[in-house]
Image 1 (cartoon, rainbow, N blue to C red):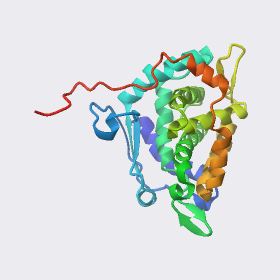
Image 2: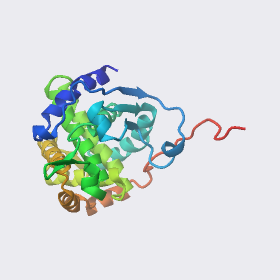
Image 3: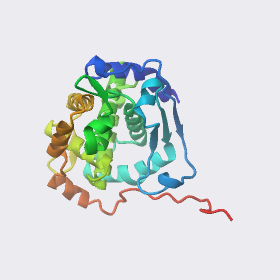
Image 4: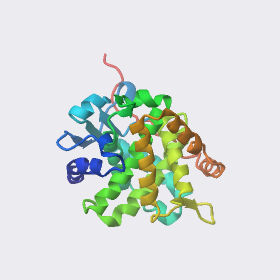
Length: 290
């Protein structure tokens, strides 16, 4: 709860710090940003099947975000299951041992918190020919992947801001970066047809291009912690500008350039096929009512 209070207090300042023209950054000061971390003992409907969400940021309506803000809910028991059953086992096999050991449940939860917060940050609308238009409408089919990438990368940008301003301990920044990259190896296994997989495949390729992620002589992946802040800041600027301008062709070109899985990553992930891609919760309640 102490960490949530820090995040809530800083939302407006993080928004103001983003690398984007001020006219594209609606103020978040004074807007409600309620957040809760909880266990979820039972799921039904859309949440029960397929991709197991570990957080929600609702409602998905930019008009309400602009007027009132949004609420974030984090499902800790589902986050713990994702980390312990998928993320950490994969990280131990594909990342250099010392960096895989830095990835943690706490680091992953912190990254996810900032991801969900960032869904509510950045531009509220795209501007085109002097008019405001819905970003989803402007970007078209590429929007879902773009928005997930913006939340990932913007969230990491926000974490660095919190560290720089003394709100989070500097000694944990490497843990946050290691946890973020470990999470990428989980998510890209869904494939690029899924929005999260599409987003994180692009992020991975960009980080490799910038030298922030590489491979050692043994073929294990390595994070260059010193290069991460600049790479994240540049990628955040690109994604925020695409949303702010509603430039569909720019979004499509960007994902076209960075959206394919490299052969060496595909080979590395083939070697962890025995580790689940996701988990299927077993709910100890009757499915029906007599």
